[in-house]
Image 1: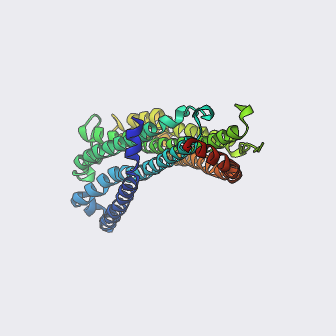
Image 2: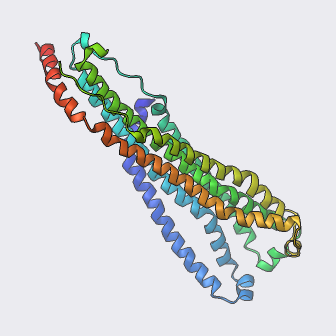
Image 3: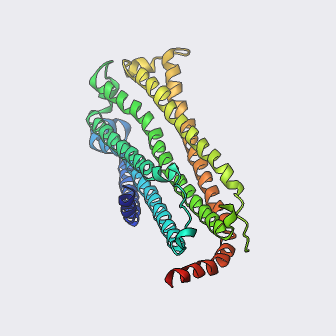
Length: 222
Length: 126
């Protein structure tokens, strides 16, 4: 399993490039959406709310799925950083093993047991990516609801009675949106946790290697 | 006999877990507030209340209290989440800054160890 993760980690430049591409695409879509909004809000209120439903649908739906898409891009970049840390960890470990393999059998030092967070790091990174993908899925679902609601003129939406499908839709959008923002940050926190674990592992390896070389020079400490 | 001092554990290594935990606490708090405060209030405010009813809500009514919550809460909730992200980043920066301290005497260690490793390596080859 760990070997497979080590091999997969070599794909980190691809992950970073994909994440960056997603953020660039999101910027492009955001710019187009802003032009849409400029055209919409430069039209008199009565006209825009009763005739420009296509523009309103685009503005509202893009505003719901695009932030989660951007966060997926950022998540992929952070995931790439975690994978790059994993490669550094693997290289440091193999370099240490190679140096110590030179020693005769009676002087061989036992390799330290890797800390638990070292093995957990890739899983935590994957959990983070899952959170971003789930947030994007929820964003796309909400934008679908927004497409249905904002296809109606605004006065019709405003006049929607209690328990009507339109009001339920508006309720769903706002209720889930309130949760979606912290969920995205939860994904970022998970990725940061994986980076923290990776760095702590690197520090552990460097300290252990220096310690082992010290024990080699001072066998009495063994 | 050559002796080397093991690297002293830098202070940053003692402090970084605090910032990591702080980041988790802030971001988890933001998530919990979103889940248990913002979402139920939004459902309650919009669900079952037509726009005319909401607009006619008077001072001191539960509807206005809910409106206050769902408009005011996101204004501090997002900065709180960013504070969590910042705490994580400070933790990561502290970890990075501890690496030079750990590598400080590595050159000295390697210099002392190389002849020994070469000697053992030579013994292995013979």
